[in-house]
Amino acid sequence: MKNSWRYATAFLLALVATAAGAQMGRFSSPHVMGFWNPVVGAGAEYEMQSAKGDKSNMQITIVGKESVDGKDAYWYEMSFNHGNGQMVMKQLMVLNGSDTQISRMIMQMPGRPPMEMPTQMMHQDRAPQTADVRTGGEDLGSETITVPAGTFTCQHYKTKSGGEVWVSQKVSPYGLVKSKSNDTSMELTKIITGAKDQITGTPQPFNPQMMMQQQQQPQ
Image (cartoon, rainbow, N blue to C red; front, top):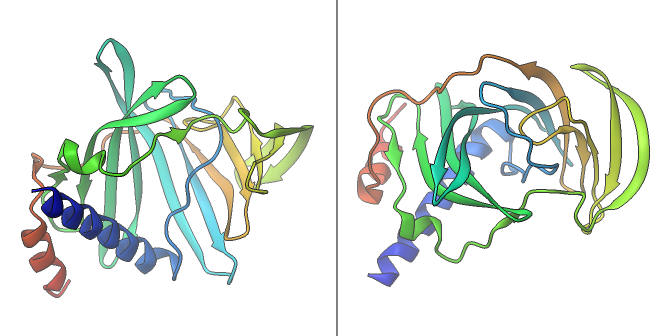
């Protein structure tokens, strides 16, 4: 059983990387750095650029709120184009100290019903993600910067890995206005209000064999 979960996890990661690659060239979706600032109905759209110059757009929004073990949890939704349609993934994120943990995950490929990932697979070999770049980051001071979404007064941080992040309380869900790393840069292109869940239909249990068959079918 343990090997089957490892296979399913590897397949899901490969599937997401393939979908991301179709939209973003040959690099996968970056980890969004900033600080956890969820507001239901709010979000942001970003333009990303790889070190090779490939550009893509990604939208992240907060589309719901629940309680998990007495803690506030928010549905964090990410969407980007894939093939002939839009791929959508949403995660129920719980803040635990300065880390975020995933309680549930649902993904929907273009033209397919949504699938919910099993809890065992989500937590297989997965460490919590740091939700606050300010923890352990070097504060480089306040700066006013201009991006496609407008002009923002930001706090500028250098991360432990050597990246740079500009953040603002005016942006949800991660405060991110701009970031740079060795692999990817991101800029805010639009602040989103009134965001709604883009997952349509009733989520089905994750079936790796069915997803593999669907991926092999022409779009």
